Length: 329
Image (cartoon, rainbow, N blue to C red; front, side, top):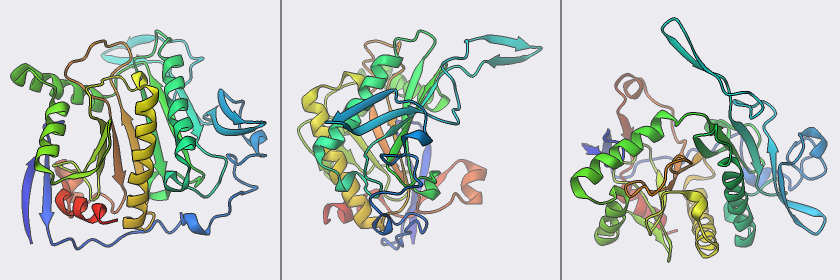
């Protein structure tokens, strides 16, 4: 078994990639077997007819009198929009009140499906819901950053199998996003170009890690993937704010997301995963060096002591092998 260090252009961090001839074992999340779930669960707070188990709807898209996508407040929010923004110090310590927003996007009325079994027009509505909530919340001057996070499966941190995502809006820019923007700006100062745009061009040219591509989007297995079967979806044209997505791009993204999740679920036996939408801070304009994107991180193993001690991720399946495998599906 050989190994190599790979430097991630987007974070300036190193990853150890093992070349062990693709000896991974699909690790189905035993507590989340989609196929064994019913279409409706009377105990699920996200199923139609159980709306009394949740708070009021912030947004609903309907087909007749039935909802297709529903956005609700998180019943145990990390941050609250009703909290007044206050920043203060206690001796040498700085504190900011828990101001923000924490919402849940219930992405389908059907209890036992993922994007791979949904119609593309239904996924369109999910992405439209994301966009509408971004456009509404960015009007709040207290908020600096909005993120969408999907935790699919117990190992990814979700104990409700019904398909949903969380939206969290912050009064500060999260450290990971600040780091991405700083690295992108550093690259721009040297190359006078967006690192994401250059990466897309290089990946298309090399054709070693492109899993899927359509007119407006590309799905790659990143060169310095932190975990096995990590994927990244990016707009092929330079775009820094997700909420600027137009109707044609939105449909392209729905189609690519459906196929991507289909391939992952087939390859990994419905393993848990996190899907995260990274976009520019809402108040920043005309970022020539940052590019919004979606990261998909399967949860095939827990972090080792080595990884926690060093901050170096170890990936046991090369991105090139990941790409070859997923392309065959």
